[in-house]
Length: 301
Ligand code: HMG
Ligand code: MG
Image (cartoon, rainbow, N blue to C red; front, top):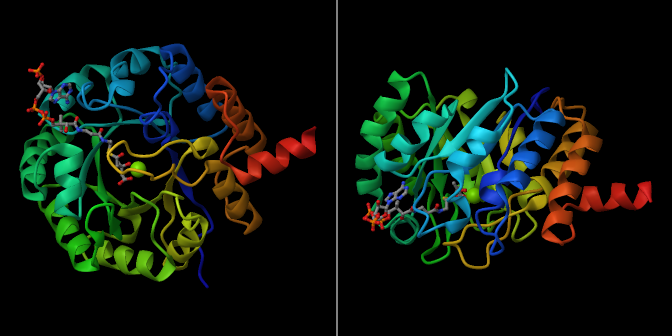
């Protein structure tokens, strides 16, 4: 196997992790979480989303959170933008990267963004142009890349079609997203392969929710293909409000432990990461979803 020697992780905890929280999480806590993640060595953090506050109330404080972060040079701060209105609200906050998100399944597209797949691409086209003209990197999320909560199995051909549409409008990178965490290694590889028909290996990442406990296996299957960029969520926080029952992304701590154990560099200090996860779990008065964090905390005690 030719595994990569270095992996880049994006912690999506402050966004994907917290967007689904019913209890209000104060701005100061969100900012502190970002600070702790950057102190742990994360080089990219998905901070928030500029979506409709009626749809996702937890992200209504997007601009305040962005404004409160003491930025560290060399770290990328990304935000989700669903439409031009979201992009315009995000621009004064100077994100390094925006994420446009579309689904490989029509029903999920409607439920999550109130439009068809094609309409979402039409919305994104002028946004991509504006962002790139402003020097902002544009990443795209390919949701429901293996399964949809409403339509069931999603064929690789749908992923390929969506990846092509993203490519045609100038999206620079795509994340193959298992939104509801139903994927298994071969299915994930097929979805990755579909995205790789239109994107270079260096421009594709994995975004695996861990609902069925397959995310580490799916990461390993992607590493085998040479994929070296992954999203993860500290303490395994999260889930999508429009994907009932889906749990958070793979815990960043679990991914870091696996990668370091394989001799793959991440630049992340696992102890500090565990502290960041403990900080947010304590605030939410919940046990961490990370098996590695739980093991290490037991050992510390
Ligand atoms: P809509 O209701 O069709 O929007 O929602 P609209 O354009 O008809 O406007 C209706 C109202 O919303 C107006 O306000 C707009 O101003 C306002 P009113 O006149 O009624 O007072 N509005 C906005 N306000 C703030 N920011 C905006 C914005 N846009 C409109 N950007 C929309 C369409 C796309 C906005 C809505 O469906 C939405 O916000 N969806 C986002 C849902 C979401 O955040 N889902 C979770 C993130 S995606 C995810 O988690 C998947 C991912 O992790 C990968 C994976 O795992 O698959 C990325
Ligand atoms: Mg997600």
